[in-house]
Image (cartoon, rainbow, N blue to C red; front, side):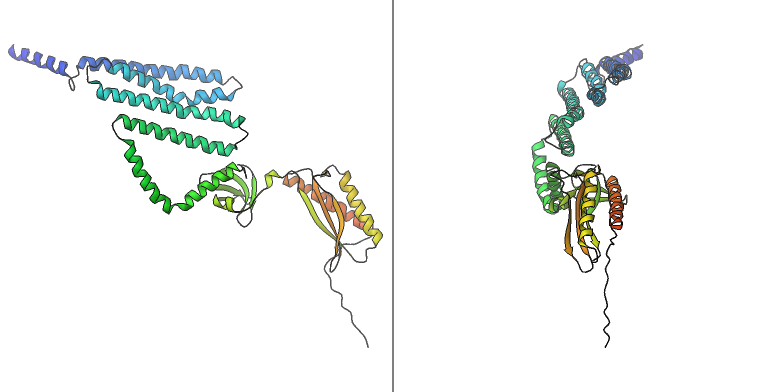
Length: 360
């Protein structure tokens, strides 16, 4: 009987002392409470979140859709934070470590919520922002998200007694050393910011940089810009190239220009020249494909007496800015000019050399 009594007493002592002085009954109660909140989390994510997503999907406003989707993670994490806090409140343990864990979980929840909520509000800013380009807003949003993550990480470290100040000071000295060897990186970064602030081009624009690249912009990064060339190859160009060289943005063209030299033979008479010029000009004025406003000049004038031709210089603008439509208009104009020249019994000149043979 003494053996059984001793075993009973040992069991009760172990049960009472538990783990690190915590009663095993309290541990079981705490685990049951935490498991209950995990069950609530599953129910919440399965029914409440899904019902809410289904409800906002019926609305025409995209803001509430993105808000619900972005807050799904923090919403599922909230029952874990609450469950851990309620379950640990039943434990008779020194509140130091448990309090730090609770504060750490709450800090993660708060900063995670701030990080996620930026996305939906950034969509509103993009739709309403007229001062900043869409790509620059994307950069600012990415920088804010990174800043929130850094601040949240620093706050958690501070809760655990890890001083952030000395770490930042050490990183500052390290950053100076890195900056000396990464001048091109910062040069490209600053150039990229200038490109976005000045709105030289945006994603989807057709740009041309003499001697560098011509194509469609697919992405503007912190260090470089990705451009899809017309042969469908992909080029990655450092941003400083766009800051130091002239960038022609063909997507911003209002009207495309046609600038031709029409060379006629020297045997063309003055009357023929006048008639040809007038008919070309009248055709352009009457054709709906061309723009003849004050901002888009029309000029059909004799330019010079060249070595083998009398040159008529034609300058006009099309209404369209699309490349393929512009090519179609040029095709129509070229055929019409050829018809006009032939109807007036004139001929186009070509480079030629006359040889005179003298006989004695």
